[in-house]
Length: 323
Image (cartoon, rainbow, N blue to C red; front, side, top):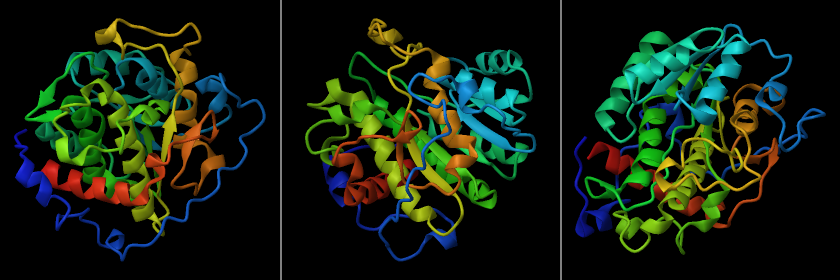
């Protein structure tokens, strides 16, 4: 992947950039008519497991893509959806880790290599997924990183690249397969989006300068805004986009920051419960443009509900992934 970032070029971003190459989605701008989140079935409360969230479901014949399948919430999401009969395509940066994770679950799981920081890898992954599945019933954007220091990928703060831009490009490359199945895009966000830098997305300084200590929260805000704008674009297609927070979950994601988890941290099976619910449960059929926490509509910041910021982020992201 190669793209350069400079102040003059960023000032030009947002003028006229390519959008998704799907004619039905290129409609005049309309406000998002977010559908209400129905009450979950009895027993689905905070702390419920992913197996409880998918109890009784028969997912045979469905195909789901889960990024970051080799550990934590991604591994648990893949395990449970495969257990219920879905064909799960799981991505990992390492071929060996992907194969090992897929071999460890009961059911059908297929590994695919994906490095979200390398846009060539994202495109190659999408091409391979197309060969495996012409239709995706769900695409779960789960993989992510938390950094304890300031890192950049060709000038852009690394967490923004991995957690947001890589997933933006992957969804763009595969969205027609989701629409063909009237499927669901599930973006794993975080309540940490509330700790993003003042003003929201730092369009004028995406390098992270001055705000890199809040880089993870910044990337999670980007996840929520991306899901919001995608939901608007999917209106009328039958496909949906929702953002979910798994809650504070003990996984390997904090390994570079000292694994500083609270005592009340959830297990991966608890953290994966709402992502699994959003991806496959019939209770959420047709629900679009929502932010979910513990199977219900979650509280979010005004910035994450900012439709204008979401639209601008889409334009900026489209420009960056093509540069």
